[in-house]
Length: 296
Image (cartoon, rainbow, N blue to C red):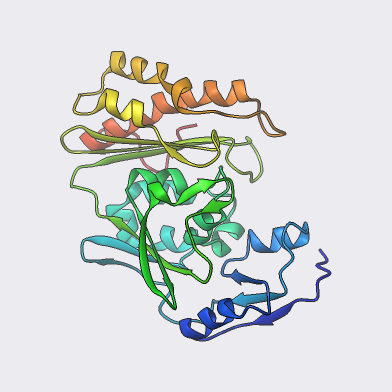
C-alpha cells in the first residue's frame, strides 16, 4: 500500500497540544487513533490532509470504568479492550456481543469504539448498540466541553454533530437496570471479514422498556421509534413480535449495493428483529441464548 501525500505527522502528548494542532489554520488536519478508517481513506484518496495528528500518546484516554453511574469509554479504547473488560462482560453484555462481531481480531485490536461512531458510516457496528443504550458523546475544544446525546450525533453518511476544533475525548453509557436483556444481530458474509450488510440491536430493561435500533439500512444508524412505541410496556409474545416485524418496512430505507440488495436487507432485518427481540426477552428472563452465540 502506497500513500503518496506530502503529509506532516505529529504525535502530541497532551490534549491541549492536539487541540492546538486542530486550531492551526495553515494545515488541513486529520486525527489518528486506531487508524483503520483513516488509513484506508488516505490510501483511496478519499481524504487529502496536510497534517496527521496521532493522539495515541495522550494519557488518560484509554479508560474503561464506571463513573457517576455510567460506563466511561475513552476515545482510545479498542473493541478488543471492550472484550477484555470484566466490567463490560458483567454489566454490558450487549456491548460485548457487538464487539465480538466486529471484523477480525486484527481490526478489533486497532479500531476504537469512538472512532467507529466518528466515521459515521451507515454500517458502523457500535452505532445501533449505543443508540439503544442512550450513550452520550463528550467533546472538548478551546471553547469548552460538550455532551451530545447519540440520537443527535449522526446527521448523515459520514457526518456527525462534531464541530470544527473539537476532539471526542470519551463516551458514556448509562448502566442498565438489573436483569436487563440485550441482543445484537449482524448480517455479513459467511466467510471473511466484512462491514455489516444490516444489523439490529435490542435492549430490554425491567418494566418491558424496549429500545430498538438498526444499522446499514438507512443514511445512518437509527432508533426504531414506531416499533418501540408498539411494544412499550408489553410482554413480547409471538403475536406482538409479528406485529413489530410488520413495521420494519416503515423504519428502514435500505439501498442496493455491491454487498446486498435492498430487498434482501429488508427481509433480513425482519428475520434479525424477530431473533433479537426473542433473544433479549429470553436473556432478561435468564433462559435465552448465551451472548457468545451468534443470532445470525
